[in-house]
Length: 252
Image 1 (cartoon, rainbow, N blue to C red):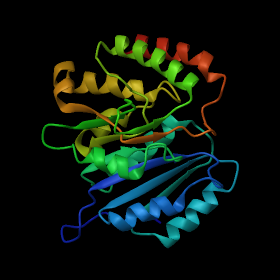
Image 2: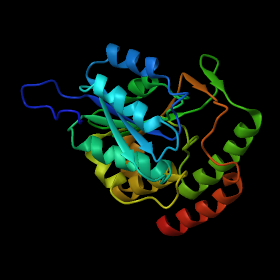
Image 3: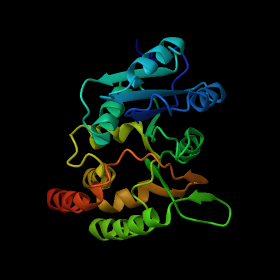
């Protein structure tokens, strides 16, 4: 079952959010996704089951059958990593002719509502909006101290690689004007987990560095909650440095 492509007489989909899923059968917060859809009928979700070994695929398919106008499910037979799951979902979303397309994590560390808020910054001059976990007096950012420390080290290195003053490339919520999605997602990514960094390189390459600076916006999220059951393998903390080197060599 697929979402219907809007006709000229039907309501245009404003925003499609892609959600990569791996073994989420017992923790996916379906009610929160449904509440968002009830409040925002011009939005839709594409859930991509990335070769789960539990009942995630079956659960998502049943859910899709109950919400045929607002939920699409893609089931991949093999686990290929978050990067490929997001890429597949983003390209599928393009077929539905939405105005904007974004992605977020299944654990809702960045909520659907937060991504919707980010999407409101998209306009004729802003094509790429990405959330940032900047701690302020009026927001809620809950992160384990060691994740924050490692994250800041990585973020500083990435900012130097990009030669851009980006505070946070790895925050889960990102939204794009549909016009640039194919340019960013058509090719497979080098890294299964650091593909966000590749998105920045691709955007600079496709738009030009100065135009990218003018047409992108980093927006502090109002809430980000660290979840204990991370899908990133623990050992990746050591191998991610090799991914960064490969990315730098590919895009420099």
